[in-house]
Image 1: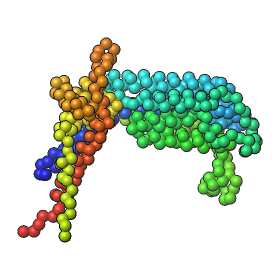
Image 2: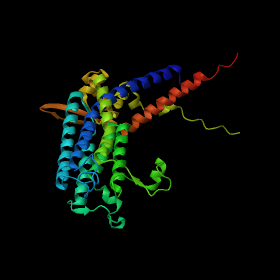
Image 3: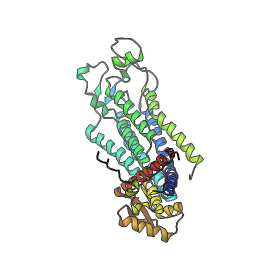
Image 4: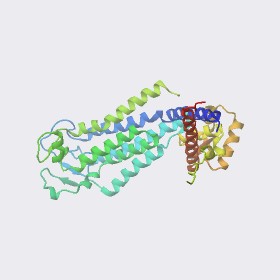
Length: 249
Length: 115
């Protein structure tokens, strides 16, 4: 191999890198809108709870958790309708957005994966859960409560999986982290007998009290939903700012 | 003492179909998107319709990309999609080029023998 061949290879690689970066930026600059739409849907779901931010003396929790989190909802059917109308609307808006971008830029994203995953998991939940009817009274003995996996019958799970699918379609590690964060919070909050319950080892780590029997965070569903939506809002703001700076990079 | 086997030269891993500069550009653009419009690719690479068509035919015959014809409203529109083989071929080509470059760097970093 001559040094000219080597220099040519360096030039080709640099050119390919530039081309890759440019195409990647152009293709994935539109990810801010679906991320923001998911965040808005999460934040709007705070309206489904009777007391989303204020502390409440008594709470009656209906299972499955159609509002999303195990707390007192205004009406199970309202929650049910919210997600089963909201998620298809979100998918339709996302499809319109990506269709418009594809016509304008000539570049397509694998957004049907996001749509299929979000709707598919939601439909699966509906099939598994059928209709909301079981009531869990506070103070119920632990052994009478359903297993932790019952808590996974929540629309928030379909949102988490849809965000992970969006991350794959948009090749975004930041979106993947946001999806994993929503999944983690959902698994913890819906898998515990009480909202925000902490295991003894968790309270030990937090340094509240060594050798305690556990604890509970004094946060309400609204606070948790804000925490879930926060990474998506930050992602959307950063990506939208970038796409304004480099609209056709 | 037996001679150690000499590893094959990275230039031997270069694929003639993929190595051509324009075709490498086509595969690179397609690897970053699900599908790309013919006109977008043409403008991106600064080619004429005929020139791009010629390269696309070669890549399509090698099953490295797929041509999807459709309509946008009433206007016919051609979309291009990378196949699994195309993705693997691009990855192998870039790896071979990187090996060539690192070989060149090693060669230039070696101290010159004293005369």
